[in-house]
Image (cartoon, rainbow over the protein chains, first blue to last red):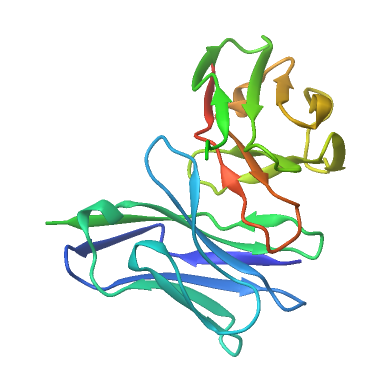
Length: 112
Length: 115
């Protein structure tokens, strides 16, 4: 069954530092992978998605992620963190039954 | 373009009471989803509609949860009777066609507290 594992329930960075949020997937078929962001008391917003083609995917707000099949990973990065990036981030995969399955989330904390 | 609307935003009930949530998807979106997000976890799909038909309700606790999407637009999710473990945020999402690569757009959610 397809699933995702997010390493680290909390990640803390300083403003201006590199953001790296880790996601590993398991899938018996070529995966479709997604990153969503959730701000407090709001719904989820799509940051980026990988379906086919280029393995480096650029998203909104300066985020990007690279699909690495050999490592079964889809880590999310941003070169320079901003205070407004503080939120919860979810990695997700589409299963063989066309269902979106989410990881447990990583809360990003940004300090001045 | 208006987003996915949900109401109420917050609801507090006693266990064994009933509760209903309402969702209005983005205009023209054929597919509507209800997710349950328990504190500290990612959202879990409860039910998926394609127009007004159910595509997947395999994780819906059918002894207490029910959902409908009349006329293929608005949807309601009902819990009767509620249990303590139903305390969660209930998220509604919609997508244009429902195919795998479609983006799902989420509403702000309804936070349910069962006492």
